[in-house]
Structures are given as C-alpha cells and as structure tokens.
Image (cartoon, rainbow, N blue to C red; front, side, top):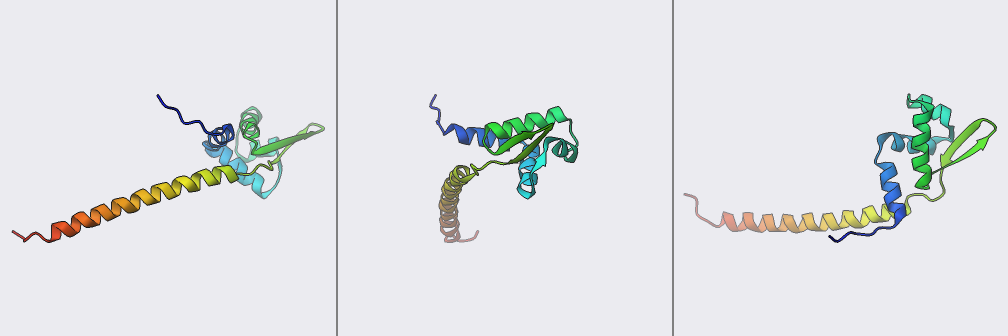
Length: 119
C-alpha cells in the first residue's frame, strides 16, 4: 500500500483542529489570552479535560502556555496556519478543476441528448 507522507506539522495541526472544542479554544484565544481555568469555565469542562485539549494544541504549535505563579496562561502560537492554508488551497483548486470538467461532460451529454427527436 502506498502512503502519502506529509509534513508532521500538517498531521498534528489537522488532528488538533479536528475537534470542535479545540477549534473553539483557538477562536477564543484569537480574541484574548486566557488561563486554563477560564477556558475550562467557558467550555464547561474540567480542568483536566481542558489541560488535555491545550496540550494537543501545544504539540501542534498552535498554542503556547506560560506559567506565572499558579496560573497557566494560554495564547496563540506564532507558527500560524500558513502551511495548512496552502495545502487546503491546493486541494480546493484540484477539486474545483475536477468539478468543472464534470460539468463540461454533463453539458455535452445534455447537448447530445437534445438532438434526438422526441417520441
């Protein structure tokens, strides 16, 4: 079996973003930095659950945390999503081209079918 090898950062990012809660965390941190406690309260989950989500986002480089005293603050990572956006755009163009080709085939089939006399 042939396997496609993608950069590990893409795999980590897409895996991290596959969860709605983690996407929500990214949205929230896009507005303002937040402590793990405040994120847990906002998303109505336990501290342990929120820590696990934040760790996944940290491994992907999407979030960084800093501990000051007893408070761990989260903020967006500097890496961004440029590589992921480029991958999505390349595949969007591929799908668009294939759908356009399919539209042309269907149009030709409809045109050829309209030349036949009605019975």
